[in-house]
Length: 95
Image (cartoon, rainbow, N blue to C red; front, side, top):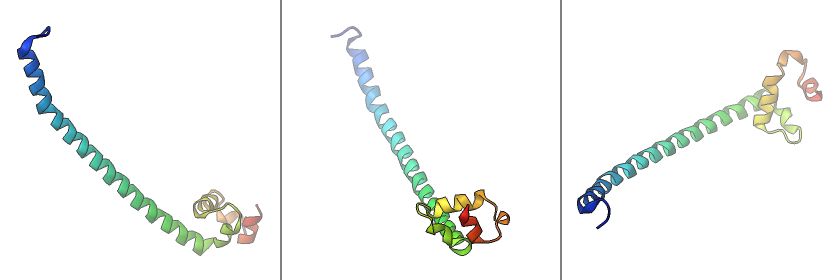
């Protein structure tokens, strides 16, 4: 019979049946929310990357000619070194 008896075992079994489903549903909701947040963040990233492409193409496209420099890296370089420090884009690329 066990140490706690038949009634305790039946109670534990009933509690397990009634609470497991609640936990599963809670986890399912949490997972759906996380997936939704990830999709939203991916959408924002795509939007920001498109804006970065537009800005670099309009203001400093030759920075992409440097080996290993992508749009994102190029944007970081451009904002790190203020444009007023350089008279021309060619001078900027010499540094």
